[in-house]
Image 1 (cartoon, rainbow, N blue to C red):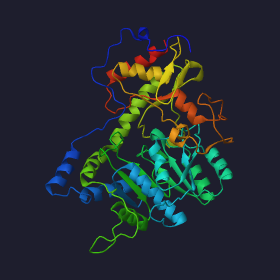
Image 2 (cartoon, rainbow, N blue to C red):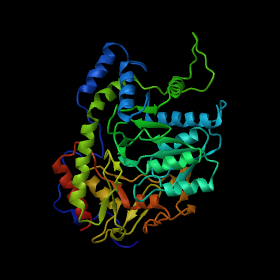
Image 3 (cartoon, rainbow, N blue to C red):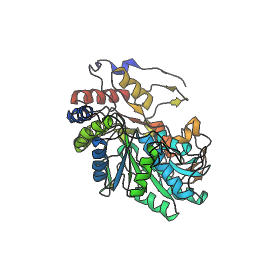
Image 4 (cartoon, one colour):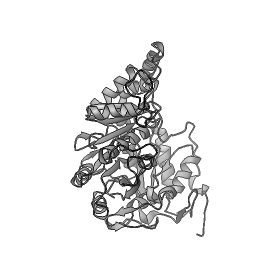
Length: 434
């Protein structure tokens, strides 16, 4: 690679650094949270039981449209127990020292955070990664159908909703159920988003949401498992409190975990939950301002399907292939050649950082991660590997997720961005293509 390989300061002459940092996504507190935390402390309910937990479980189940919610320490804990629950339904209770999946393959979203798929490994399974639909940035139903043709014995699908978008989830569930498979729905990033008017979190046989510090509703931590089965809810509650049996002493007959939600964390969630619609509206305004202000540049915001109403958790964009400068990524570093009229995610993110704004690369697909690099990966055309430089050509791209990772990025999406901050961010992005 020849030419300018480092930050090209000349592009950004005259732009001032933001005085207040523009964040990717931060918690937004309103005061109600303090009330319920103080109540828990005043009444001495500061452990993993209490009224805050009860209220959060009931309120979230009601909002999403499920019968029961189980408050857990984080979204990953909820995913783990959701996958264990399905593994036990499919294959029976595991012996201590083994997992319920015991070497069996599980179909998983490829373009996601690794918390979606790590619990498959916790339970001894092998993730098989399903490529991404270019129209939705989520699991591709065509590739999923192909995966069942290649691996007909698979009986579990773990599907994530990316960045608050919703993929073709009805097709995904229909395909899975037609093959006798259960679906775990990871709605950690999509709380409040809908598909055909139905809330995410209702499509899976069991589903989860997250209250991590950067989520659209937060408790600083915490997660929730959602189900329509009282027996399943009770089983998960038992597992999450070390699987203690109903005895006067500590009696244990199966493996358990310390996964229960704290009543303090639940107090923050309880207060924050009332502002879900407000947060979504604020995030939507940020997204629309980017979309309208950047529409003349050689990039586009992520695609929103006709049936999807996102929660706009993060605003993400993808550069046109012809507008990409020369760029390459290693395992931990990236290199690019600054070029007139062209840019790349690395240059844009570097420029934002220099002017006190936080962006992020798109999630690196799971099949490209060193830990999972030898796992099967299924695309529309079959199973195999592709160069990370392969780019979309119509709807027949070989490796869609890798291409979105190569050309895409997450823009500062905090719901507290001021107009001045966002205008500065937009100008910085424009200068990258100067």
